[in-house]
Length: 143
Length: 143
DNA sequence: CTAATGTCTCTAGCAACTATAGGTTCAAGG
DNA sequence: CCTTGAACCTATAGTTGCTAGAGACATTAG
Image (spheres, rainbow over the protein chains, first blue to last red):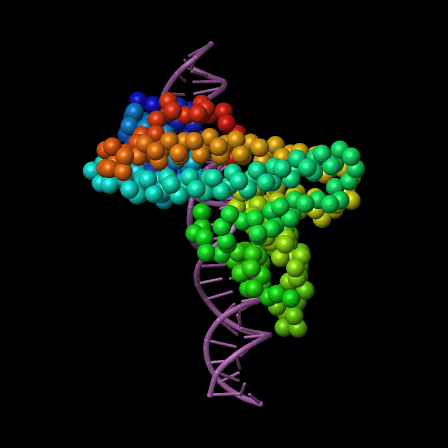
């Protein structure tokens, strides 16, 4: 049985965050010690690790809640979980592409700075240019 | 001259968000019509598109403020500008590296999903399993 | 046994919006 | 010209996903 601090250290999640997850119902209420302290077992550990990894991948908590409910009922189809993962994957790829363009421009700026002023800075154009958008704006679902 | 609604539609930014950006000083105070309504020009449009794209890439508003200051003062001494550009460049590179790791993990998740039931779906296992982490947890800088 | 650390609850704050309320201005149709 | 409805104004409060603080109780190392 782990105290909340040990659990947090093991899963890489801060203690107040664990209590927050419990508060919003992502984690169930754990057993308590005689002195009212939370005590966790291996299944809590797995659940928390799942939440942490999903958060790292950019899943919103509501999507995680959905995934957890799917895994609580493993006889259902995993199509929904797969769709969420695919959506995240394409979002990640779009971000990488844009960041590479910005990286190039910042490299160019740093090189230019080495020899004078930053007149002719194109950072705004690189990120300001709508024409370089992977997809058009305005109709995208919010992240 | 564009009203705030037209500007927002053109840049893909909601109207209250534009007013919020003005409030926190990312956008200057625009001209007003005789009836006190905001009027924007092409340079406001570029600036707002820049902010939107940078936000999509996950830059915090304070980093965007710095990037904008680079283009706002193109004659600025290179010492200051260079420091800002270098800091942003390393932030961009860190973000790219992290996103690539996430891309790999999502690819693996999607590839392993058997499209059957969750019992055979690895999405949840992959996210729950600490052993498959690209890097150990706990010592990473927060996003 | 005592001192330090960990835990408890509760409240408040943060970033970056988003929504609502209650009023004003503008542009288009009758 | 006048009305009507959309778009605008200000100001405030709510959202998500935490994070930090205060003040009190529990546990553990020396």
